[in-house]
Every structure is written in C-alpha cells, then in structure tokens.
Amino acid sequence: MQIEDSEILEKFNNPQTQELGFKLLLNKYQQKIYWHIRRIVIEHEDADDVVQDVFIKVWKNLESFRQDSQLYTWLYRIATNESITFLNKKKTKFNSSFEELSEKLSESLNDDNYFTGDQIQKKLQKALLTLPEKQRLVFNMKYYDDLKFQEISDILGTSVGALKASYHLAVKKIEQFLLASD
Image: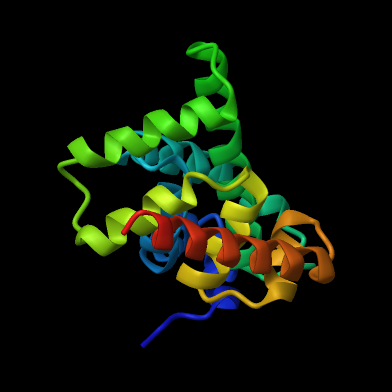
C-alpha cells in the first residue's frame, strides 16, 4: 500500500518520528527523482550526486514546506533546479556552451555502463540532447513521468500554453532527428 503524502509530512513534522517520515519520503520518491534527474544530467554518477544534493535540501527545508502544492511537485521543482544548476556548473567548468555540453553527454551515452536501454532508447536520448533545455525538460516530464501540463507548469513556473508549444516543438524535432538518423 502506498503511503499518503499527508502521513509522511505528519511523521516528518513530529520530532519523535521525523527520521521515519523522511525514510518514507525516500522510499516513495527516491527512484522517481533519480530517473527525472538522470534524464536531465544523463550520467549515472552525476545523477547520484544531484539526488544526494536534492534530498539534503529536502531534509533541510521539508519543515517549511507550505503545502500550497503537492509534495511531488515541490520535490520535482527542487530536483529540476538542482539538475539545471549542476549542468550550468558543468558548462562553466568545461567552459562550454549548452550545445557543446549536450554533445559531450550524447557521446558519453555510448560508454555508459549504467545505460540499460536498447538502441532505440539510446537514439531517443541522443535526440533529446539536441533539444533546447526547456523543451527537453518538458518532454521528459510529459513523456517519461506522465505529468499533466498543469503539474509541469507548477514545477517550471511556465504557462500551460507555452509548455504545450514546447512539447509540440520537441516532438517534431525528435521525429526529425530519428528520421534523419536512419
């Protein structure tokens, strides 16, 4: 049985059961957050580092979570922001543009021992890396996480209309990439 977020928060906000509440949160969301981050940063080791940063931030700030959004929306927002921050630091470290970083990440897919997808999944990941950052985020959240546009809007702070347009453009670009790479 899946535990409700309200029960997780109740346990976390009680000093006697705070650790249990956090463990329940980890059990419920850690894998989803890992894959969300992994699709953004691509490399397993990087994803592990970002996941750790996310849950440290969650631990420090969960008490102040106002519950004006759903818990997973709040978690996804933190995970998305931490992933983007990580990629920006990586771009700065390697003194490269987003396009150059995307190319490096695409090349690293070929050598990734943790990538378990088939050739089609690898092609899709490479296609996604050709997209602008916002389109890639929207596509990942819609396609892989099956989030509604309103939920993505809450996470990214962008209008539903703009997100639908980004998703539509992303799908078109992915189709073009996949057709051109045959």
